[in-house]
Length: 367
Image 1 (spheres, rainbow, N blue to C red):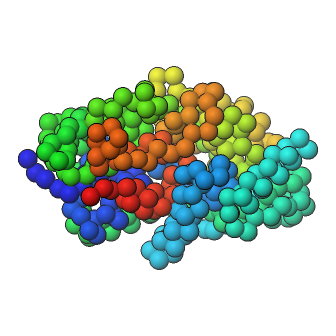
Image 2 (image 1 turned 45 degrees about the vertical axis):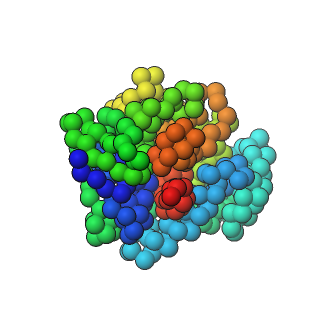
């Protein structure tokens, strides 16, 4: 049986960031079920560089978003990856939303998000004339990126370091072997490693379960939450990100404008849990009216021509009705699985935080 120092399961943004970091020092093999990197959550999202304003103080989401924002901008600049530090306004469209804007501002200040300030409607509408707002908070460290270029660069760095990528390799089980692990794919191939990182995204709970972890008692079972984006041909370009106040249930950050680095614009995502808990990327116009209503509350431009554009699915530890759930990033030594390192529930701000997550998760390796 072939052996390597580290196996990383999953080649999304987080898995790729880990490979690029660890392959400098270790031999690394990546097992990815799809035919190339980033085919699920990492490439089906708003491609926003988040700031850390939304999340509870001292949570991993806050700490890693703040650190990730800094690392990501530096990496993208150094590697000529398309991005735009355009900034964001989180806006109130009605008087009853202003207390939530004020709460977000205070939360962001407490979290240490740099440069935050309150803004009136006149400032917001001058910065983005297509938008209607009465107040908001300006977030200068928010921006957009090209996630494909980011992931491609991380893959190239990893390969240059000697990492091996095995695409179309779906993991079926993880078993303890000597002082490490034997990882077997659905095709029957096996490889051993001293250390395993589970970065399988939408399927990370299943990988954890295949290693013998009781995902229900550990509260690791994921719920899949789908979000859809719509496009209006009447909106050709916008200057910066416009976000509404987040949904009260914490399920999403609300339907906002999604800016691409090529200048195009879509709107979304909505958020709803999938009953069958499987990745379904089909689209129809079932939720068009909901999205049209939400977008019309802050857009002056006529967006009645909205039509489905694309969608994504988030791996949420937060189940319907639950309160905030943080990332799970842990070495499962307490479960008798030393150096089997789980990364579960890596949803937003996971893309922003990918380099910081790699930095943090790497520090969990035990001698």
